Length: 120
Image (cartoon, rainbow, N blue to C red; front, side, top):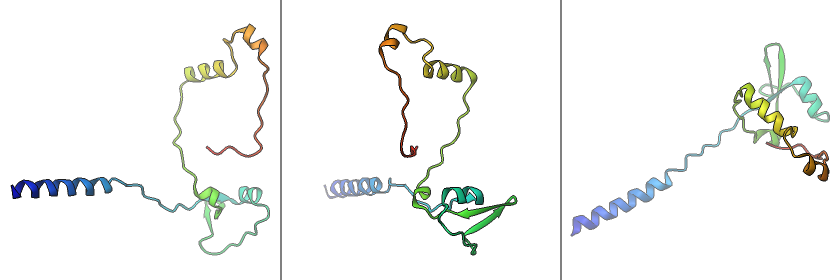
């Protein structure tokens, strides 16, 4: 009886510890750089100071370290190449090639303009 309760206790503890250990999210600090011309366009009011660690020269381009928090939270999304059939279907849907003419004439079409940039 003692062995069964000890075994059950060890089993419960191991399951509880293993469920806590599943949190594997690691937040790493990335350093983001912009080309000098792009940096001047994006941040025209900021003064550029060339101190060690704040800039980098790469392939004859000067890259400036970005310290703006909006840029630090970016996530890179891998590019997925699509074939030409996908592009043709996408264009047909976007430009409503096969839409019903009667329902299209009743709906008012308009463009949307966002005041702020869309964050993806």
